[in-house]
Amino acid sequence: GATALVIVTPLTPETRGLIGEPELAALAPGAVVIDVSRGGVTDLDALVEALEVGQIAAAAVDVFPTEPLPADDRLWNTPNLLVTPHTAGNSADYQRRIASCFADNLLAFEQGFTPPGKVDRATGY
Image 1 (cartoon, rainbow, N blue to C red):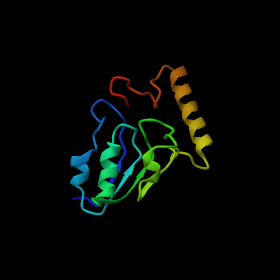
Image 2 (cartoon, rainbow, N blue to C red; image 1 turned 45 degrees about the horizontal axis):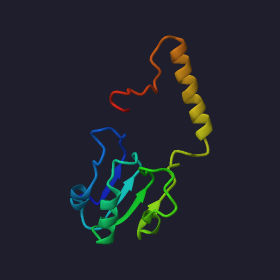
Image 3 (cartoon, one colour; image 1 turned 180 degrees about the vertical axis):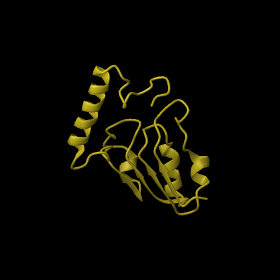
């Protein structure tokens, strides 16, 4: 099995619960899991169980079904699990990048073109 799993996908009806016990069990013992997708893609109970039994060595999760993650959630105290506050996209130039994206979308809209960042609500991305 794989030694690392990085989960980067939108949350759609097809991806809800995509990663669960069978997928985690298919990883090589001691694998590492990183989830930066959307809350609901990964079964977090299965992830915690895989950590507790040693199926995976470590995990980092940036997305949760409820955000912010409640202060009393057991994920905060799960050994070998790094919890981050769903701000992985923030960087020193974040404001510049978001303003540029907005300007590109506005210009396309004003010129009658489909904005490059348009989300297809039927597919969810």
